[in-house]
Image (cartoon, rainbow, N blue to C red; front, side, top):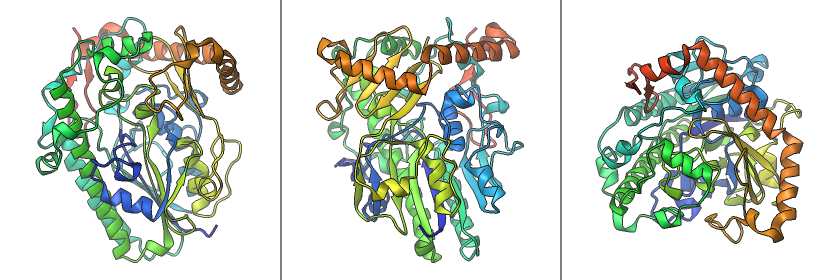
Length: 479
């Protein structure tokens, strides 16, 4: 494959079903749809951890979360585990970032030649209170759905306008570079707050919004991990249908806004003559539940949370292609290196997306894990089928071909015992789930103690969303 530039665009918390190219007749994403039409869309792409900080550390390094120890939003990536960015710099490739990174600090060597207006974790530490797994203070997320969701303005919307502006300038400045480069453009939308530009909010009729699986209380899955999530985030009392529809309407509006920012950058790329010399990759760090199973946000291993959009376009990418081979964000590591002509490191679990885009669909096991807030114990996901292994809770097994809404747990059916055992064997070939869970909790306890203990952290409180550069975090005390 001929080396080219690479524009890697990543959003935050984009449910992959909210795109026209995914078959959604309500979503308005003309720019992503055109990108998919001119390239290849992976229909079964997944995060390696459905929460921001560890997902981004895994993507940066091409390694699983348990291999690098960046467990949750209180363990931000600090550059200590080299990733694709470091390799690019070693080879003399320019690799710049614009926008949200959610690493520890710009003072670290995070693998970029330059970081433009980066959003890093609060105070270089992140959400330490989220490291408390044993009897933590519960969080109140209801206001963001009941009171704040709707039309308006937010610092996140303004930040992404600024990020898109910076990307257009960057492309103009580097349109004639002699060597291939990588630009990592990281947009923060459609991450909450669920506040949409008013004109885009008005595009959507609340009565026609697609509703997520099992959003009604009587349909909620009876599983201890999901019950705990709902208690932890104050979702036990169900939201009314108008509230859920309003939140989804706002989310669709923010997603249309995101699509517009991406479109402006792709137009700029065409305008400066980079189409024939630049590949484009679009994805997100994780999905969004939108009320599925009574949960809002990410956190779970269901499709709406663990699934991510993933589109490739540019030279050597098949046009109008759809690939059903399962892939994940760790596949970014060899994909980025190969795009600019650098030999990949095969000891990592990822494989080149450029190559898989050219190959027939096949079975492939991809892996995700979660050790963060809202859980008492860790859990792990494997797919072809959807297998979720919970520490101290019943496993789940879903046949995505016949049950795409994941409403029937086959792990509890005796006739599927052999399949469940096979998947557990595959999981244990990757890691010892109990030992990893114990290590994560030990590291988290040490982190909490390092920062003064649970009482001191509860007194300081937590923040709803990470502030953009120049914005102060708004802490909510739990005392």
